[in-house]
Amino acid sequence: MKYKHSPQSFFNLLGKEIIFSDKRSKAMPEINVKGTLTGIRLNEVEIRKNNNVTKWYPLISNDIEFNLTPIRKYEEPLDEELDDDIYTIEEWENVVNEGFINNNDGSGYWVKDGFKSNDEAFSTRRLDATHVTWYNK
Image 1 (cartoon, rainbow, N blue to C red):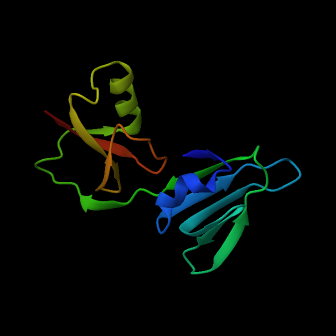
Image 2 (cartoon, helix red, strand yellow):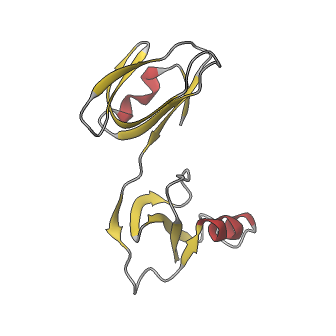
């Protein structure tokens, strides 16, 4: 999700794993942090990294766009009997772009390392997903 320096718009992500990235001016390094969003102040977000170190990251300017991307969890293992329509990301994008599958045809879920997420395949694609499992109506 892209935000224009509006911390009020992402309170629903508090306590969730996110990736915070902030492309700054050439004079300042880019921030790219993975962790749990633990705090929000007017000009800062607090992120706890996996090593339990917590740090506040500044939101420098109203003109800076930053991303808070919820990390998709893959917890349910694929079922060989039920999950027989599995597409690579490239195949998935092709069948959707060609109009062979749309969100009214059934439901699907993002897959990584043999596990399904609980996020539907027509939600925002995450770069870590490798496949989509699809269930026709």
